Length: 119
Image 1 (cartoon, rainbow, N blue to C red):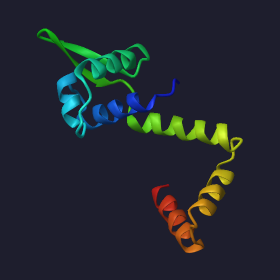
Image 2 (image 1 turned 135 degrees about the horizontal axis):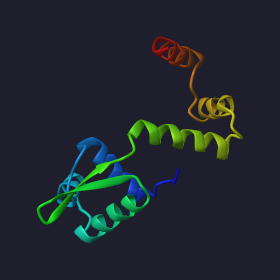
Image 3 (image 1 turned 90 degrees about the horizontal axis):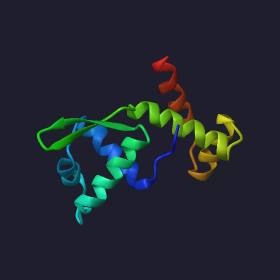
Image 4 (image 1 turned 180 degrees about the horizontal axis):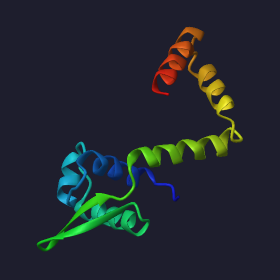
């Protein structure tokens, strides 16, 4: 699966939130200063060519919607992160984040309890 640029990911985050939207509605979700219409339109077309979004015709315009669910992309991104930076080891990744963020053993136990609840 292809990776998203930061701009593409920003637009996907909005589409995942809205479910369906035209370019104008996407722009409305951005904070000030809002991006130009042509910029957003171009990025949406790139997302379409990459297979991340599709559209329905509505009058003279298009209503865009995500083809990929946010959870699917998140899973793929995390796996890519682990493979590229931690030699495929989730243990190494967790260890790195524990050290980098000074996570206590108590906090780690809390995370493990949450994980076990979801199984």
